[in-house]
Length: 359
Image 1: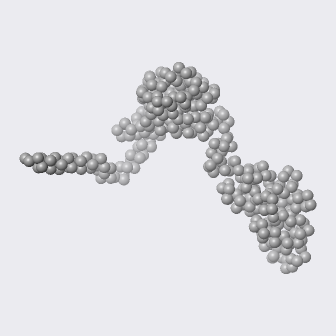
Image 2: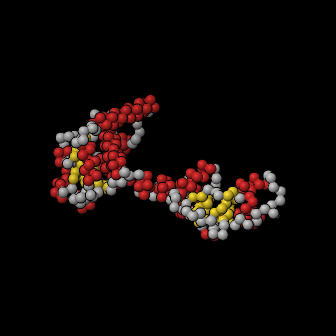
Image 3: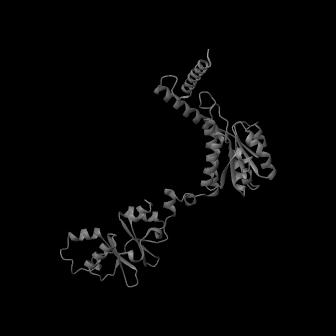
């Protein structure tokens, strides 16, 4: 065979092998898809993981010296941060546990186990507590940094699936997250075990949250960009209209002039104040509609003749969400803002609260 023929045959062979390998690497199912089989696998997965969580619950006993209790006591007594570390799927779980702890009142951060050996170990101080996660308890990347953690005096909580693992033996507290089997039909991919580990991390976070007395306002402070943060951190003074934007007239003002004030300020109402700027009444567009049904001549009326005396008000230092509750309870769209002595300092329309995303 000439050289050209040989090269051509080699090219054809390589091309065919490449095509065969590409076909093997595609996501094309080897068998016909079965909806019934997919549903069966889904239910089996959920059942296996639910059973794993129930078994984990059963291992958290009521003894005061139980590992879970000792872990909580250790975390509460710590003066530093909680450092959560892992590798592979355990690393992903560790990252989520750190985020949950941080958002519920326990300062925490994630350190990648492999990166720790290349400089990130400097993030950890002797006052910190390391939560090391490895289902086998033999992750080399974690075991490589544990001696340094122990030497600096930091405490170690291990979460593994084996009580006799190297990591468990080195830990100050070991939390066992063992499962009977993975949901993966090959019993290889971390599924039930990662679910159990994640759930136990949530249990730690919630127990710490409760022990610290962490409440809604604390949660809002760490979530200022969320809906709860806006509801619990936005005050009436932050969203009320003030100064020249407040519609206000005196009791002697004619009804016609009061209607002009309502139109100019665009709040569909006006406050009525005395000479000291104290609230004595309110008149709304709803009052006007009802008035039209009974009165033909408005020219002789003053606002004092038709206003609602002693209207509901709210203080500027109250939460804006409280203003929402008042409006909803009494089915009103506007609310005057007054100081403790009744001085008018602002006005709220329901649209102001909507724009501030309090509603």
